[in-house]
Every structure is written in structure tokens, then in C-alpha cells.
Length: 343
Image 1 (spheres, rainbow, N blue to C red):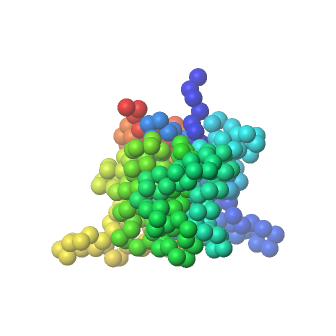
Image 2: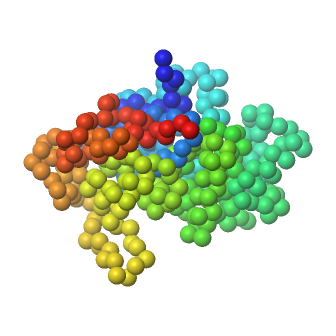
Image 3: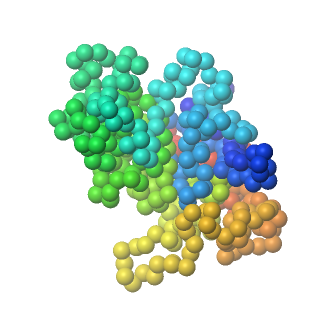
């Protein structure tokens, strides 16, 4: 019998709206999403898409902060809604999160030491001098000097310092998995590389797997081993990040890659492509492929039938009828495609 993944989303759908005042107005934030997160060997998986594609909804569902409308999220084989108190405590240690805006996590009345001391006390990791040493070791691990960080209030630190403290807080518990939701979107470009380097180092040196959620294809390419592309709550392409970014198969992935400006004045940037907030894009089709109204390759079948994930290579899938000669991915389980081969 195979071992259950550390964390698993099984056909997770999350629908918002449909209340008493407007029952017809609903938004499908996540649709039939399946992903088993293995942590051996440790990997970095990027979840990429525009604003409104379902990335943050997925993160909140995996963390147990959002209850699926249908489907389930499982931790070590148990539905998150059925975890015992002991299992919840184990989950909170195994799975840590880094949010987009670090300032919201801090209490402005406490010095930043507080966010590092709290998990140590809660999980009984150390006490006294050893607790202080553990904090300082962890700060060094993410590129911070304790003498320039501890004893200060949040407003006295830069955005990059505050975010790296959040990375340090996550690392203190030596988790198996970190879910990083847009962790560098609110820091300037000079600090993004430092934070991404810290995350990659934690993955390689401490064996921590990372789900890196972002709208930025460039940083996803820099840090990730593999990638899943979301559009309107559905996975449209997934596979090795090198192949997906350099040779995207789904028209939406091609759109994302084509919209990244290159530092080459002789290269024509595809300015006519509509990229941004999905809510401001063309109307969503009522049936068939969700991308049909934006797709340059649309066929009749695309208007009536939603494409499954076609397995175009052993570690590659694309939800596009142009690849209907390929077999479909059983159970639409992205974990089968994104899992790294153990060393």
C-alpha cells in the first residue's frame, strides 16, 4: 500500500457567491483541482496565474483556512476537517506559510522578537539561552544579522527584513513544507533575489519542500523545479519549469510567456496580448474551454467541451484539444506529473 502524500487536494472546488440576494452570481475560484504534495525528495513547485486565477484560494484551502465547496484536502491521508487536536498540532509544525504582506502579520506594539519567540514557546522547541541561540541561528540562515534585527519594532525594519523574518519564523519549526504566497511581490527588485535565494537554500540545505505561488513567471522560473499554470481556477498546463517556460504548449501559457518583456530592444514585446486581472478580460464562455474566447487556436470542440489534461510527455500535461492524440492524465492528478524522481 502506497504512503499517503504529506498534503493532498482531491478534486477541490471552491465557489464564492450565490447568496440570497443574488443566487445566480457565483465565482468558481477553484475547479476540480487535484494535487498530491510529496516531500521526498524535497522540491519547489510554482503555481502561476493572473490575478483571479485561484492561486490564493488554493493556498488557503491547502492551509485549512478555506473549506472546499466540494472535494477535500487531506493531511497524511486524513481529511483536514476531521483532524484530531494532536494531528492539527502536527500539521501546524509540518506545514508553514509565508504570506504576501508581512506587515499584516506583525503586531505593531510588539518588537519583532515576539513573532520568533511565540512558535518556540508554543511547540516547546527550546528555552532560555538556547531559545535565543536558535533564533539567532535561524536569522543568520535567511541572511539577517540579529544585532540589526532583534529588539526593533516592525516599522523600524525594511519590507525585505520583515519578509525574511517571516521566512525565519517558518524555518524555526523545521517544517516539511512551506507554502509561500506571493512572498516577494511587495519588496523591491533588489531584495527579491535575496529572498528567493534564501528559499532555494532552505530547500537544498534543510530539505524543505516549497509551494511557490506567484503571478510572476520570471521568479517562478528562477526558483522552481516544476510549475502548474492556473486559469480561472483550473490547471491548464504543468510540468518541468524549464520546458513549460521555454516551450509553453497551452495558449494561455504562451500568452504569459509572451507578455514578459525581454531586455532586448530588437525583440518585439507582444503588447496586444491581454494580460492582467481576469475580471477585466473578455467574458467567460458559458461552456467548453474557459480560454476559448481568448484563444487564437479555438476550434468548434473548444466551444462545447472542456478539455482534459492531455499527457504530452511523461512529465508534462496541457489542457488543450490540439493534443488530443495524447493520453489523458488519470484522475487529473498533477502530483503524478510534478513529483520529482527520488535521488
